[in-house]
Length: 267
Image (tube, rainbow, N blue to C red; front, side):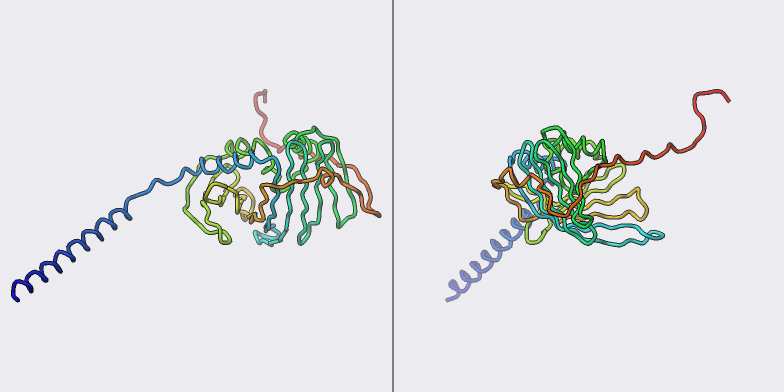
């Protein structure tokens, strides 16, 4: 009887020892530091993934701030649907609190239609998305939110402005696990949430304009991604509704140079 009791005690002690040993090994494994993802690499992979898609579409929910008085800010909302068909098709529908516009590019012309004002303007542009957007911006200051995602040079456009980068950690964006990344440039602070997995889709973007008064922010949630879209060419052609007026694009006014001290001359 005494030997059986001693044997049972020994077995209990041995069991506790093995349990504690396993727990210690598990804790040590759990505490082992893991290498953090490189934020620039993660962002580049997302840009390359978008570049690999010949056709895609997505919906974005945008909020943006406007400074109106002594640093006070107002916030507005905007829903956007973006359709991309490379190399020369792009269409954006934007409906919001103060903006209701349509942007069409069909490989020949860019047309911007303002539903509120019932006017539209068109211009001839180069046949590819990148060149067309560049010319429209250069000549008339035309810029449309998020259309840079259609550029095959997206990584080059973004990376040249990055001065500092940070991997913040994992985060959930509307139920989707994402890498949360932060980037700082000269004039802007950028945060991007990129879906973890084999489809590194951009799920959220935050831009803070740090050089502007009160540092207004611009935020977009991106969803309803369709990476296997089949988009008809006809949807990129603008057909004027009845009762609308055609106008001309107007080049932005050139700001006069700031007065300062003379340089490189006599007194």
